[in-house]
Image 1 (cartoon, protein in one colour):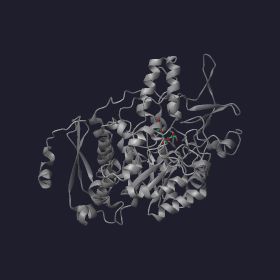
Image 2: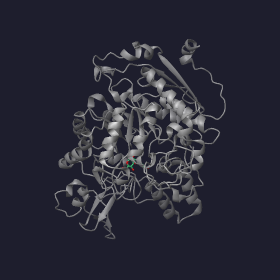
Image 3: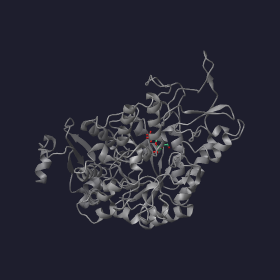
Image 4: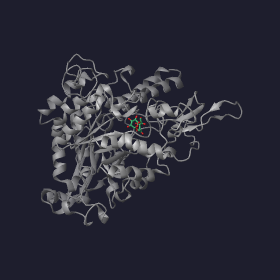
Length: 579
Ligand code: TEU
């Protein structure tokens, strides 16, 4: 449909370069490995690949600590390999989206090296520096506020050389850029964005996009009395200058017709989300909200009991994000996994051997029927699950996991019961589960490296690869992979229903079955904002196959047993039609 932007009906396949495919047998995934699997991704039915940070980086946070935006992390390849990847994707009529990580850089980025060199360096103000405060009683040096970092501890790091603190919302090795400085913003646009846009990338997944404007730096309210540092996400997210910064960034993107999907944590207020994604605001095309993936997590992510949530919570979370497209000009996303989440089958269904395949299909059907741009994370399409509890803590490589485990250890004086509970929680929720090598084939390293004896950078789940791998699933009509392919074909065929349709949940309180209805809509946006004439429904209602069905009813049984269901009154006449 000519007036509907391409990214609305797109299926995006997310790639974690370290763990996708190793082409040169060094145990680390690489760009040539990605190129070698573009046909596999295309055959799934994806139109876009999103590549997690492949920039030069010391890898303290797996590339989300960028040392140089304009070069590639050597084990992954070179800028020339990236150019080749973009060309190969485009040749297959696929698009390439990169991760734009510009809330912070690595402390090894040359900008920060200059900034920290002296208080009067011209780049001093490119990062966020503050003098110490002192305890009135003891005289002890203290950071400017009590904010807790995303990976634990204070967000402030003392710098001996210039005797000031700098702000880091993530690791100390990830100092926050100062977006208030116009020169900094210009440098970001040029180095991190235009360098790659000129090389043909089609858009960005924008990391931590709502943290650029930090608001005031008052102390956060005390929510964890046992800790010196307090959750401050509602203060450093969605600050007063967000609209201005994103508007400016949007002008750069508009020159290249590039798409954006912003990562939007700590934003439960849907009106606020709509400001970012409303077409007329010209800020972001869409965002990732955390409503679904945060289900069942404690206030501190890992302080949780696995499966302490009930199905209605999932229905509500999905409804909130689906409703962003209802009666307004916003857009939304559908996703259940990414590199920061454990596997969806293990989270939302059952990874018991007898339920894995059915669970994978259940969640595939659910996701493929949701409106918005669809995202699939590598391995999700074959139904990969979390690695088991008998893998010890040394297999967890993520700084988020190890910091949590260290914190529990410090707080409890290494109490074995507490440490075991921490391990159980990490086995359920750690980011590491998404980061092990992709299961390509039933070999000791899951077919990740060319030689079966090469040891990957993270342990491959060989036992899982025996029963769950892309190679066997490609030839099996009953596989999770075949199911995904089929679901994505139907989604495209009935775009008005599944990509653009309205979402209504039925029988909200039912804790076993998730019923929802999709009602077809055209690709046009109401109010004529994106469309040509504002008429709603040109393709949903009248264009051949796409318009033949006005409604679809999706019924998902989240229990392990057969269920007798009563067709709800709201859709009784739909049932008659389909019979
Ligand atoms: O994540 C930002 C974020 O807000 C969190 O969801 C974070 O992943 C979580 O608190 C960890 O448990 C983004 C990236 O997706 C993530 O991989 C990076 O580590 C982070 O930014 C810093 O760049």
